[in-house]
Image 1: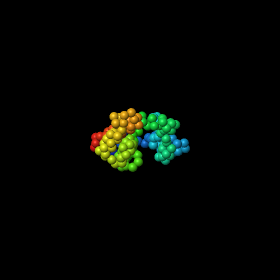
Image 2 (image 1 turned 90 degrees about the vertical axis):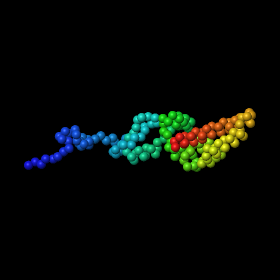
Image 3 (image 1 turned 60 degrees about the horizontal axis):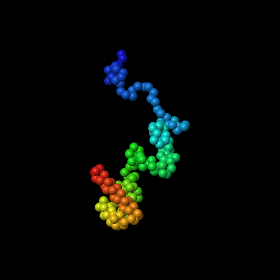
Image 4 (image 1 turned 45 degrees about the vertical axis):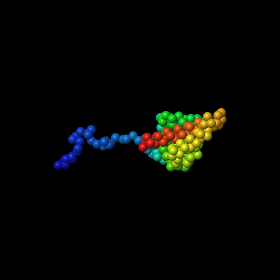
Length: 177
């Protein structure tokens, strides 16, 4: 006598669980010549191009070690491309902990560090310290005080821009909470 086997699909083959069919699955191999590993790590073929290589983990690591996003560009062109991509956030965004230069706790951007350097302040200076330093610089280099001194006017404008950078960064920190 044949024994009945109980199933949960009530005889409808489409109701069986996923992965229960025995059809072969497609596996993309690594694009590195001669490699037979599964290629599951995408890597860009060229900057700003949607085409991707698919590498295994070992060859993806090798590829990334040698990858240069700005390859073939002059220093000025690379700096301009970086500026464009950061301005509209369509490119990459620096992680906050990589956005600082020199000493500090990682909470300051390179622009903030340059502004603090202009005022002669430490990286952990407060906005009040910056305000005092800006007032002192403005008092010494204001066009009404120095007259036609081009160097003083340039320093005054740089101080004005630096204080605006620090002020807007502080407002952004308060907004983020």
